[in-house]
Length: 191
Image (cartoon, rainbow, N blue to C red; front, top):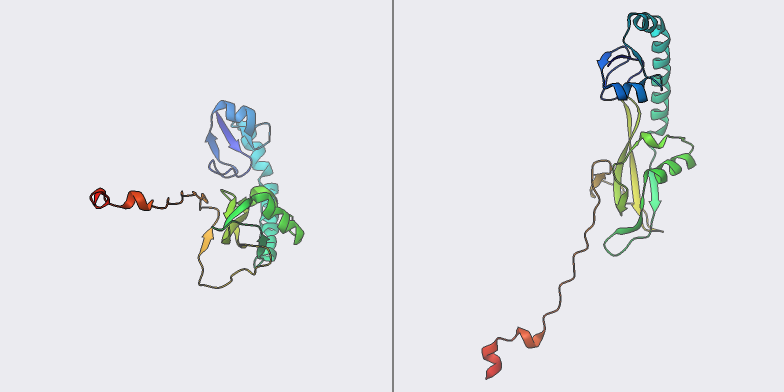
């Protein structure tokens, strides 16, 4: 089914593009949400009339996103969490935790704007991207420390990109101690 996009849709196209999509996707998602029109001559004229209004709205959205990005740039988030011996957290730091911490600092951010593939499950320094608009992004430093500890700031430690890194910790079994009786060679034991 051919439709005219009414807004930018990631991985599909820009506003005004005429694209071919599967009929179910158009009927069940794009058309009911007003994200597209069927590609007809009447809808092409309708889109041309609305183009000016959409351009103004796009500029205002971009301006608001850039202002928010400028305000939030330089903000650091500190999470104090209990952890085991191998710096593995008892729990995790999730997108909801990051959004709540930002809200406490006065920034109401939609959780879908926080690019975190997997929850943070270990102590350390991380970076998370906030996507405010198509090409307006901010990288936010996140420090996860034990309660009462200060975060290590500086260039010596490794900073992990939390949106791309997978944080799986495998507990390797402890080596079993060697039994002194069995460790003796059989010939030596006979003598």
